[in-house]
Amino acid sequence: MGKPGMPGGQLREILQQRLLTHVYQPIVDLNGRSILGYEALMRGPADSGLRGPDALLAVARGSGLMLELELASCAMAVERFAKLGLPGKLFVNAS
Image (cartoon, rainbow, N blue to C red; front, side, top):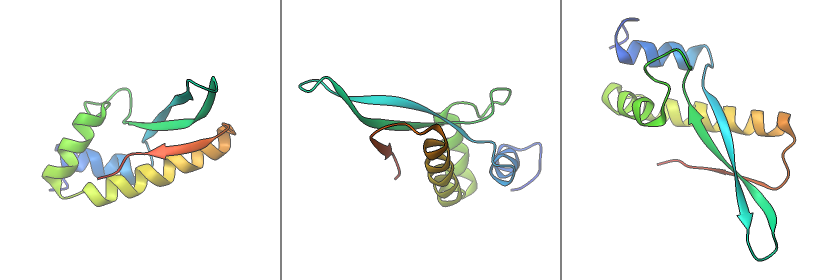
């Protein structure tokens, strides 16, 4: 666990360097035809094998890094949401 070339080591590096990103999917109120808020969808670095959330979560589970991944993801999602100034509520998935 922790060697840079191994998936757990790669995930540790992503977390230490704060390389997680999020895309924000609108949650729409169809009756009122308005945006209620946004769901934050976690992504890893585009140039890594850990780009998708499934890969990130699998490596986190296998490396004992689930808590670290979820805490980092939540913090970064909130920070970016605030910087973007998106209207409405922020929805974040966690286990």
